[in-house]
Length: 558
Image (cartoon, rainbow, N blue to C red; front, side, top):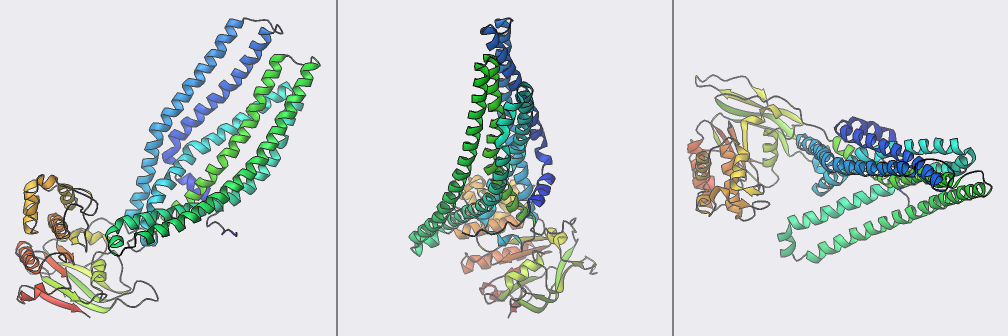
């Protein structure tokens, strides 16, 4: 199977990792310091064991009790350092992971509305949790471990070389082979792991969509279809995992054979020297300990390679998220008095080759007016709302906000942007409640709202039913307003928008789940309450027809 080339070079990934390493430096530094202390204690332990053995066999004079106590002290110190490392990983590791998740989560929320949709939400979640965890592991554990391993290898080799240069060279004879093999392993495994991660994201997306649209799946009797789709993606994942396992087993087998041969050769060399009386039993024990401490770092590096490859692949996936364009982060521009919204000769198309959803559209939503926008599906009603909220930018023309003071003077026009979004409140289509209590959802519109203000907003939104619930405002809603009917959830969402201080209130099919009589009464209440607020109401329905022309302006998009 031919594998695609990776998108980013290793050098680019390393530079990216360095820019994100700041949050991890404390834990990484502690891990390196403690690891180096363990290396030092390990070499001291080897020396203590050599002396103990020589004293016990009569090859050296000294206090057996003293050196046994020192050896025990080294073991206790190593145990305490292991406990410290476990504590650091448990406390600082979670904190570091949380900070990095917050960083990428914030970037997603600050990104342009028209950018993030190229990633499935299940894929985004997989990156925010799995890939972030891999990156934190790389920077706080894998990289520090690599430093420690190299130091341990060098220190152990020098120690052994001083004792027996020939033996030291025999032990490291397989190192060049390991380096060449690891380079080949690294490049091929990196491409395999990328495919596995993408398959995992596809699996999560399938499960998430099926749960999210469970009602549609059940009514259309496509449960088995979704299970079959999941099985196909699982089969692909199993095939990729098997490919990784075969390649990993093959490379590990070669590495282990090489290291085992080196260990055997070094051990035989030491035994012959012992037989010839050139070394003592204690020195032979030191030899075996040092051989292990030289080869173990290389084996540890072999074990770290899959983690390193996995982390570099995760880096690529997070770098892709960072490529999403950000919205301009501008200070809020709040307009005073009544506010109007003027659309001048606006064009918009979602793709360069797509049709013009809006073409030469112009309209002036006068300050304090109440306007119903009607039109067929696809006429551009929701697109117009997105333009007003600066979620998208017109491909031609412009949209501006302007104020109207009590004296009748018209203020300066301000181009619609992220800075003017603070003047709007908005009720989108569908059920947009968050999991939590009704109070939590209302406070999302205005964190400073009082209980009295919440009840008043619920009354205006025809949502007095909340007061009759056993727990009232503290009634819990499931995901998407679970536990409430569609109409109830819509009215709570309208109450949330009412609580937000605004100059322009946008309602995008916000009453589609209400009956005509309830919808009409709701619109009358909104009109009576928001006397100085411009209300723009997108609808398919004609419940607004009964309003007089001085109460409501109707505009049909064609």
